[in-house]
Length: 357
Image (cartoon, rainbow, N blue to C red; front, side, top):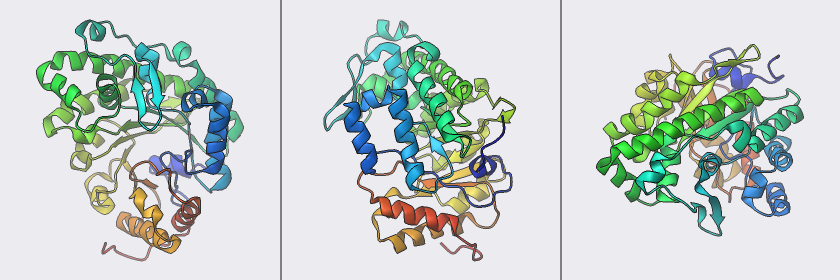
């Protein structure tokens, strides 16, 4: 299968020459877009939207119709995987995702099994295939999953957590039980990502959203090691094309070299890491993705452009190896016109010499 007509995103990840710095945004299909809110209303709930391949396709394409983005990302949620493992995902108004049956008892943890993605997550694979058809090879489609550690945080806590007390108690008190959860979840994630690739995903991303809450030693043992297992068994090519993999640990700037060592093609950066310093440390081995502070999008459009150019200057010269993105997901309150200003600023940037930022 031929590459998309606009393949700058794939080229940047593989250190091939690009015609412009590619840009996409984490959570680019979301509540900041009025058209997304209309579709979600028709679906009846967020979970219904995720589980309807036609509507998931519709919202995946919405930001591409509005903005000149260089990639699409599957509309789904990282918690579909533990939901398929039988934990009972639901969304409480104003409280975010929760599980009816969080993992607390030893017998529940010992009985945990990885789902078959082509059976229990068929709706995701159908959405991937439908989105690929609708894109008509215009831009690449990104598939994704949460990391085992991040998924385990929700699976044990039962929802979002302010201090991760329950799972960290397990980590220090019964690491054997946490390792059991992570082993099963890592198997589930690699099967899930491989199924997405077989269904049409042209790149994949691991979101380790909560890796940064771990100590130095715990990060390597309970997060990084399991992402490395996934990369070992991940399909790296399909239909004659390489499938790049991006790994993003929020709060992981101190571990960049270790992340690059696990075999990914690109490392995602949050906004607390200096992009130029990251490039000096690991840019010769992997591509970099990031890393504008999402809150910068609330400034006036000319200030948004200036902050985008600051990030570009930090990366420095060279026409590949950088995918522009935010340092985390876009806020639901972001003015859409400021996203336009951001994308225009990235695509029209001309390097002005060494960065002093």
